[in-house]
Each structure stands twice: as structure tokens, then as C-alpha cells.
Image (cartoon, rainbow, N blue to C red; front, side):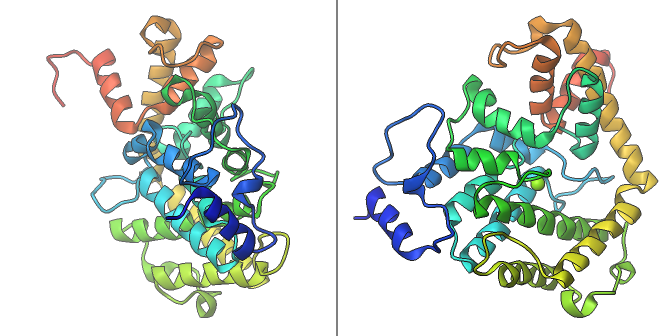
Length: 330
Ligand code: MG
């Protein structure tokens, strides 16, 4: 039988000296008895997977593409791809896979409904006294909002979630791995989804780095993941080669110019933003309708916590209930 102490010993013996070790974790906000079977990071991963906030990711948009369909990414499948790419990189560098996985699974828990357009709209609605960033909201979900009390995760997972985007790097290499895994995942799956829906043609992708990336979804991910591993091997930071950085950067720029700003994408986003704004203003005037599980705080922040946690589906249903006469069908 393998107990937690055995797993901790394995980590100490087998992982890179640069890896975060669960036995040396900086700990939790509220100290608790360790699990007899799982390491601290494995336990964090499980807490995230069993949370309601995690399950809600399945009804949150990744990129607002018109039409919909069963094969497009959702925030949940994006999250799983990030966790999987992150684990591959962590394993290749002999870092802590459990910590990487936990950060990957938790990184987008605070995402709003209706994708990044929803995030920008909430930020605008809260200005000028407050602001909204999905990474800060992800931390708030695991610290306070899940079940009205949070998940009490380790400092390493909390730090990786908060700093998966932005200028400040996480203090663990595993957290840094997720920053790259997130970008590699979304750039590639957004291309894949856009091609599937017919908004992009594979032959229209930039070809400066075609020799490095290959010409399939799988070859592009393979090349970028392998490059991060090779460029970061033995270093105290996670990085890319010049070619890897330029190739990923070019794809990303291409998506911004040729997909995210397409009128057909922007007009779908606008509809989502309209719903979000209407709900935000409604709850600013009806605080009594906000569930008790949303912790007390200044009203705009409480409304933000409630609305940001909604799925696209729930937000649409609430919008219909509140603003559309019940005899009206559409
Ligand atoms: Mg993400």
C-alpha cells in the first residue's frame, strides 16, 4: 500500500531539484490534517474537480463563435487541454505533475459567461472604483466563493491560478508551465474550432514557421510543447526558443487579426455583453435576489461575484425570466 508519506518520499527522490515538493508546501490559509493517501497537491486537484465552479465551466463560452455545435471547445474542455499540455511539459522537465494539473484545472474557474467579451464588460461595469480580471476572480472562487467558503488550497496552487496571466510570474516552475500551456492550448484550439466552423481556411494560416510547426493541429501542439521542454531543460525558468516564441506569437497575432475581430464573432459577443449588462444592472437594484452563498461585500462586488459565476446558459435563462414576458416564445 502506498501512503502519502511514500509519495512524498518519491517526489523528493525522483523529481528535479527545481520541482515543487508537496511535503515542502507553504501550506493552506486554514491548516488542516493531511490526507493519509494523497499529497497536498493531489488533494487540491481533487477539490477543484469536485467543485460546482468546475462543473459550471461546461456551459461557459471559450470563444464566442456563431452557430454553436457539439464539437466546439467550452471553457471546460479548454481547461482539460491546458491541464493535459501542462502535465506533458511538467513530466518532460521532471517537475511536479500533480501541482501543474491542479493549477491547470483551476486557472479559469473565475471566468465570466460569454468569454473574454464578458470579462471586458464586467470590468467596464465596475469602473472606475473597481476592476475585473478573470485570474483574480479564479483566486476569489477558490478562496471564498465555492460553496460560500472556498476550497482552502495550498499557496502553490493559489499562486499559480492568480499568476497564470499578467506580468508577475508564479513562484513555482509548475505555475510558469501553465502560462505556456494555456497559450499553446487556446491558440491551437481556436484555430481548430475556427476551421471547423468555416471562419478560417487551413491554407490561410501564416506559413513563416510551417517547417517548425508542421501543418496539422497535432503537429503544432507537439512542436510547441517539445520546444518549451527543450528550451527550459535544467533552467530555473520556463521559456521557449526564439523560433518557438516567434511561431506561437505569429499564430496568436493572426487569430487576433483574422478571427477575434471578425464582425460575425464581434456581433455574437455584443449579444452576450448585452445580457451581462442587463443582469448586472438588475441585481444592483435587487440585492435580495442574490443567493445567500455569495459572501457579503460592497454591492457592486457582490453582484460581480454572482454574475461572473453564471454560465452562459444560466445567464440567458435569468435574462428571459426577468426581461421577456412569460407568454412570449423565441
Ligand atoms: Mg485559460
